[in-house]
Image (cartoon, rainbow, N blue to C red; front, top):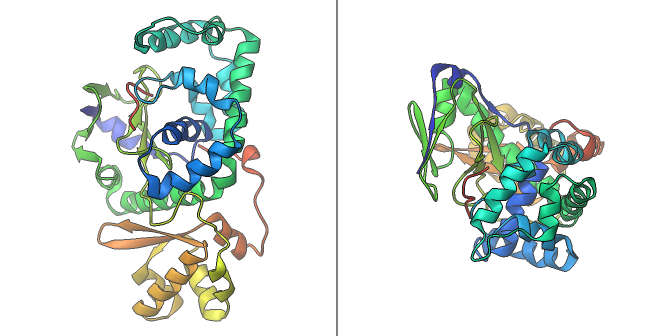
Length: 343
């Protein structure tokens, strides 16, 4: 059982990450790559990615076991500012921390509790070894995640929209109570099933909530209690695969003033009832239009209490901008461990 203990100051400092973290998603997707569960969402993704990967998995497999502890330094907080910012922070990890966290990796290796030469070089802080690790993580991201990043962003943004509404409706307590069922808010403690008993006392530092596309089952927290607290939790997945084709055949059906108005109404997120009111259509018509937009990859729908919440995907947002796209994600600042990792 994981128990996260809040004080009054902590509730005032609960915040949401601005978007998916490329390093957290990389590490958690590496877990998904090696297990067979979640085939409906991840099956096609696994098949495609395994063909593209080359030697990236060898070093990662030594650092990230199928389950259990992996080093906190693999997911620095700077990753929220983008992949390159996170990799720069990783390369700057102090040697004492590298040694301490890799000693834990060795302690969890069974039956041989010695580190391979590559990991020993990292533990010693050798520049070429850390550079090799950063290059490996970058190559893995480009092969395994970048082609699907808009889909990852859309799911995370849909979750953020649901949490934001909960926060506006009832404050931080309502936000925590709205988290997926794997998390249970019993004020002043947030609980979750966990591989080991773990007590995390926030002590006034607050908590960063980080929804993750590739987190599955139970949430993940940093193992080192002295690091800024972060809770990584799984987003809700719909019926589509992780590699759903955003520009499917339904895109050709997107014509006419009414559907354009519906898309505009969803710009900042809304329920079906709100959509009907904003677009001036019936509830049934709003639901039908949202379904068409969802099938075309322009909208994501997420259940929120007794209602459903519609938000735009990156493709839908680009359509409203007239096809203009924002800066490549590597230059954005919108990207905002674990004891045992969950699978």
